[in-house]
Length: 253
Image (tube, rainbow, N blue to C red; front, side, top):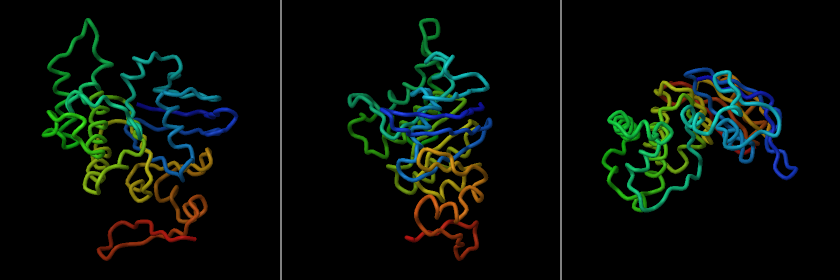
């Protein structure tokens, strides 16, 4: 499912958080959003998801203005995993993932075996099947994050938005989740802190002070001179002893 931002700007109490951002993400593509803290990544995510309305500009989902869709219609098309997602403590892990099916349920379409299958698959994808009966209050931050991702996957969206999904995960599960994202047949926008993780995405968008300053193939958008300018560090390409694909190496400027 295609998502497009056209000249998006967003201000709060006179402070501009995002200014004149335009980009399009094609069906099945994975776009990484990167930038220093406060660059506007989370703001752009909220605008793309419909959780916030732009001060100026438009968001188009499959060429249809997002503003014309109901919340239910948006929820059937877009799933978002935010950095901080509130969940009741007295609920099981499986029940959390089952919430992802809510947009598809109604009095005329109650829970069915198909919904159960979607939940089972989502739990398998994030390697959390054995945690399904556990109470939410007993889970670690990383385990909760994996379940929030599973809930989004159970929603079966056409567009998946993930705001720094690997923040609370150990390196094994960081790589596992990123590999999962790459293999999903769904349009994905993911905000990341780790620039080398962003190199594995189809394209990269770089934000700085609320503006889009680079957009393109990872090696192009994350060229060392671009990284050095907007992140305030020295960056260069490096290779490990095995001669694998190059990665970015950093040091303080």
